[in-house]
Length: 378
Image (cartoon, rainbow, N blue to C red; front, side, top):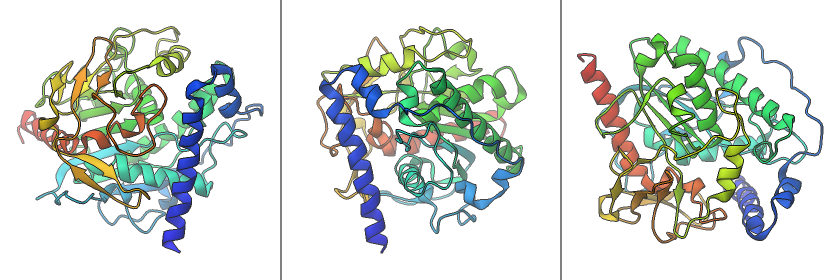
């Protein structure tokens, strides 16, 4: 039964990615036709104030073995070749998973949508696991905006994203109340998750005491404009590998790269100041070195997570992928690596942003938390 369950997830993911790949040569209008919901936006009911008190609202919820909806905590998974951390990293991680809802009829995912929940758990395993050595990892379920919400300038798209943000904000409030105020926070989000966490930083941390508690914010797979976004987030870019209290971000492309689809999506969404038409260059942290706008050879890559063919597991392969920040703020990884069929149009390795550098990110996380404690005199 477990194997059938896994294959159902894999088939669903493959179908979605196959559709995206089919759009490689199709017009923007056809992309919208395929993914933007045809229904009118209807706001779902507001969540109860105590919604995130319930275990079923969490994919991961604190310390290892904490009660959640599933039997296992996917954030604590380790690929083959990775050894358990010698000691827990003294931090509380708040992780927001990327889009796993592709419904053409619903603007926001339902919390009881089994297929969306299964995809989300799979993404937490692949993307949150570099942070799994933390004393606490929290990953909420939320009524995420469907993929098509990011492809349209219709007001409904922004409304759907706003619903997702309100859920994440509510989950974050619970996270703050459930964690020790003396414990540093590490924010991690990918794609939609990174966008929502950037907004959270802007509204909840910038210029406020909470910013001092944040050891690092990994806003991966969503462009962060150096001119239009970064100054409004309340934290500096991570310039060095031993810096704490800063932001890391990158978007991975093999060469030759065509980022037009990504740029178009970003440009029509309003910024934190309400303006549209934001521009680059974008923040590019080299995840191999932990430095901004840096270059590193593949020999310094400690381990890329290469998934098994059926996504049932994966193994670390060292020295597989290089990384170079280009003038636009894109992370170039050289020739397309053989990681499976999930690269997006334009040689966009969006789905692999974190797995490409799994082992280096794991080390970077521990190092920045250590720097935070050292700065506090710990």
